[in-house]
Image (cartoon, rainbow, N blue to C red; front, side, top):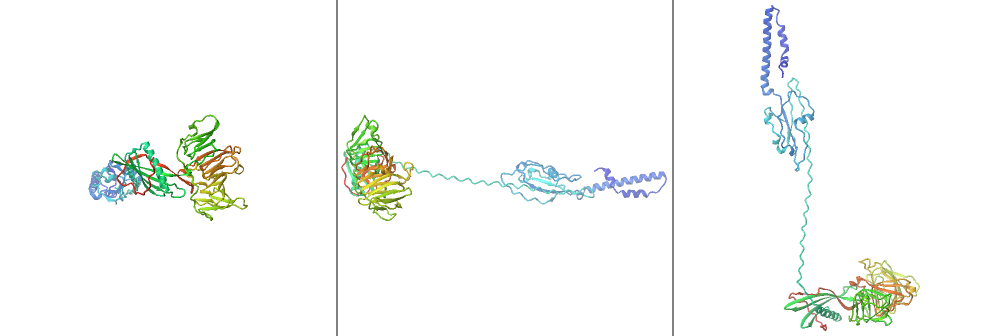
Length: 590
C-alpha cells in the first residue's frame, strides 16, 4: 500500500486543532514554532505507521481466510495435476462464478471410470489459518485420494473499514456416474453328451452263394410248413454235405387286417470249432404284392399291347405276341411256374430282353389262389364293421368319406352313410355289386358272385402325388370282376385305383369294341384268368408302392414268404442257447 495514502488517512482533525492554537508572534518565533509543529506532525505520522505495522503483525489482524473443499470425481486423467499455491487477493473483487471456478480448478472433461464410484458428500467449510494455507501445506492433486481434485472457494474481509466479502460459490453438483450396464452372464454351453459308440459287430464271414441258395430254399419251405400247422415257433435241423445247420423260426402274425405276417429265422452252424450264427427277417406276401398274378391261361388270350410295372407271376407258361408297332413290356421281374414263355402271333423280330426288361425267372413254383376268405361278420347298422346287401346293389363312393347305395332295378332315393375305419361292404349270396366313384378311407368290397366296375374308381388322395395318402380299396370276388359295357363306362380311359382279386376271371365286356382308350390299374390285379382287352383297351398295370408294407383291409395273403432283410454273413456267436424248441418236422433239404 503507498505511504501517501496512509498519511492522508491519519487523524486530520487533530492537525487542524493544533494549527488553530498558535498565537501570532514575531517572524522568528513563528519559524521556530513552525519547525516544531512540523517535527511533531512527522513524529505523529511515524508513530502511527509504527503502531499500524505492529498491529499488522498480530495474528488477529490478518484477513480471515476460509477454505471449502469439494470432492469432485474427475477420473484418472487428473491423477497427475498439481494444485498451485493459494493466495488471498490484495483487493478482492466480485468475479463471476465461472471466472472463480476457472481460477480455482482448471476445466477438464469428466470421464466415467470403468468401475462405479460412490461420491462422498461435500465436506463442511473448515477455517484454515494462514500458516495452514501456505503453499507448502496445500495438498497437490497427486495426493488427493482416489484421484479427486479439490475445488477451493475463499472469502476474506477488505482492509477498508467497510469490508466487502466474496460470496462463496455454490459447488457444482458432480455428474452422477452412469451405472455401467451389468453384462449378462454368458450362457454356459451345454456340454454335448458324448455319443455312445455303437457296439462293434464281430467281423462277418460272407456266406457263399451256393450255401446261401440252399439255406434260402430250406427256410422258405420250413416257413410254409410252420404256417400250415399253425405253430408260432419251430426248431429244425438240416444236414447238408456233412455239415449240420439248426434253424429257429418264430412267426409273428399280422397285428390287424391291414398288417403283414412276418417271421424271424436264426440259423446256427459250426466251423473249425467256432459257433457261427446268421439271422434274417421274412414277410408273407399278400396277393396285393403283385402288379399282376394270373393262375390259368386262356388259350385265346396273349399279352400284346400291355405294360406291367411291378412284379408279375404266372402259374403257367406265358404267351406273348407282337407286331411291328407294339409288343408287351414287363418292366419288373417276371416269375413263372412254367419252363418259360411261348410265342403267339408275331410279326418281325423282338429280343427277349426287349419284352422282359426286368428279367425272367422260370420254375418259380405255383402260387395257389384261395376260394374262401376270412371276413368280419356282416352287420346292418350304420357304422358297423360290415354292411351286407342281399340284392344287386349299386355302390357310389364320395370324396368326403361316405358312400351311397341303391338297389338295382328298384326306384327310390339313394341311401348314404360315412364309412367306418376300416369298412367292409359285403354282397350276400348271389348278389352282384356295381361300383364307381372317389374313395376316401380304407374299404373292402366283397361279393361271392360278381363285381361290376361301372366307371373310374380313384382315391381322394392320389398316392403318386401324396406319399402319406391313406386311402385303400380292395375289390374281392370269389368269381368274376367285370368292366361294364362301353355305354355304361363311357368312352375314353378308365382308371382303377385298387387291389383287385377275381378268383375265377377278370373280364372286359365287349372287348372287341372300337378302341376307346387305356385301362389303367394302379395297385394290383390277381385273377384266375384274363379275358382279352383289345381292341377296346390297351392296358397298363402299375404297382402301388404302398402295398409293399400294407394291404387293403382283409385282403387275402399267399402261402409265399419273401426275405425282407439279411446281411448274408456268418458271425461268431456266444454259447447261449438260440431259443426254446417248439418241435416241428424238418422239410426236405434242397
